[in-house]
Every structure is written in C-alpha cells, then in structure tokens.
Amino acid sequence: MDVIKYAVFTEKSIRLLGNNQYTSNVESGSTRTEIKHWVELFFGVKVIAMNSHRLPGKGRRMGPIIFPTRIYF
Image (cartoon, rainbow, N blue to C red; front, side, top):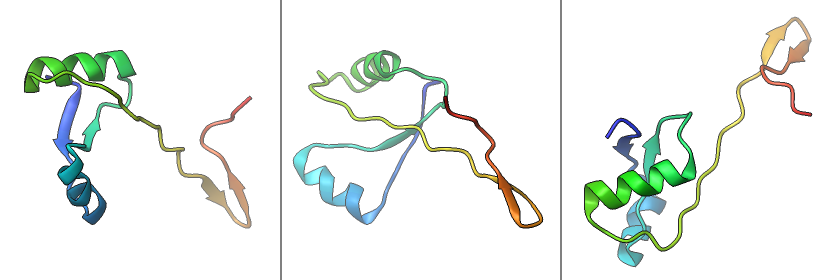
C-alpha cells in the first residue's frame, strides 16, 4: 500500500463522489497499472477507467531569467 498516499478532498472531488469517482494522491514514480492494481486490491473493486497526470516542476529563478527544472524533448 505504498503507492497510494492519501485521499484528496476538494469541492470537485466531493462532487465526483456522487458518481462513484474517487481522487487520491499517489507516489510520483508509480505507473497506471500499479495504481490500478493497488486500488483493486485494497478497496476490493473493479477499476473501469482511470485518469492520471504528472505535474511539471517549478522553474528556478536567477534574476529576470527563469530556468526550467526539467527539460522536455
């Protein structure tokens, strides 16, 4: 159960609970299949669909120039 950290409770996530859609914060290095496996194992449900995304890192600033923390190719 190291993949799933905690549930997220915002206005939108509480509204989605009525549709049996749940939100949670997970480890940054976990894959979609790992998340699906742990949700099915821990909660005893069948995952039909899942959305995930990774947030970009914040830029570093040196004077007027902003350097990205990650360089995308």
